[in-house]
Length: 233
Length: 293
Image (spheres, rainbow over the protein chains, first blue to last red):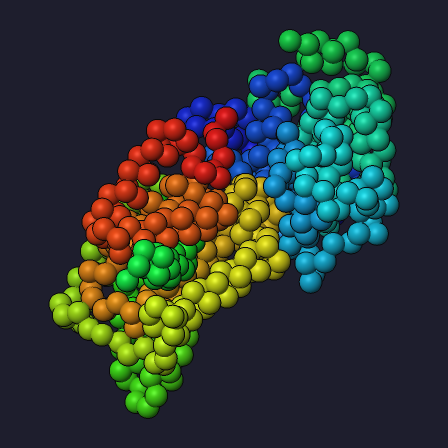
């Protein structure tokens, strides 16, 4: 599995681009983290990959096939899962129904509950609960579980630890590592360095809508001062 | 007739009205709830349903029940197909933009109405009830067909509830209603869901029309009244709220039937419209609608 983004330029309004020609590649089982302060184009990049935002230039390839330009539902069917910022669960639906919606593109639309409960054991007793009544951490777990039900090859995570307690952050980092071991590749937008250290294998530092530096996780300690500078407001 | 029996008779008439109105209003409510658009042509789908019912029942010789059952099957299917086509050909092209959809469905209203006028003619036509029998109360006899309309409408509403809350299609509809973009993120073909819901809304209106056709005369202008009443029901119940629409249909249908019998149909419509005004002033989101944060 190979996922490639080539010179992607995208923005909310025509003529005003938030992301300028970003390129990245990710192999199977890798976690690539997009780092940077608010407004540098991290979320826009994920949305553009997912087809939720118009882009003016560039392409996205999955296993050599161009998926940019396809409608969002076909990008999802190609094997791209997306967990948006703020989770955006179907709040009026139960946990089980959220998972069933997630499994829509799977064969027979079946939820692989064994896999879901292996990664997120806390959801097993909550299947019948209305999802908006879950705690923040549980909602994040459900959002990730729902995306996993799509059986993705690439999972896009937008600030999965936003507003969560440190224990939940560790739990989510563990989930991401387990996903990597299952062969799922993850592109994660994150602002917490502790999460990045726990879960990422590579980092792309963003500023002004471009990737200004790409490094492996091993290079992080040597570059931490620069990275902290780019994360501070 | 004494007041008590007269009130019972008026209540039965109100229930018949409420039964048909709930089907029609539920259709409008579904379309607004999922697509977030107002279908001004909804009443014309109702009218076309009644015209098809009349045509089918007259084309089939034999017992009227045969024609009625055929109409119950054919009318909603044809109307649903027409609505689905209209969604794909017109509404999808304007991206279901709320304002543009209002204009487009006004256009559809006139095209459908004038087409029926040309093809069906301006005369009101009667359709035979599928069966004749009377339930004899101590004070008056009441049409068995009218009572069966209440039961059939209740059964249809139960089926709609089952589809929405217990089937995969219903789940996709609810997910799309809650968050269209996230539904797409999970591979749901939202465009097809929209088309199906638009067709389902029109089919519900057509079903209501088939039930009412043997009671009222079939006419090319008969869609205007149900459109107005459905709008009243959907606004009072809360835009997009199915529970609200059903409750409002019961209350408004009953009050409309009772007031029409005790006083006049015009007064009944005035009171319903006044109720909408009061709801818009004191509870703009309707009885069960969600207040915008």
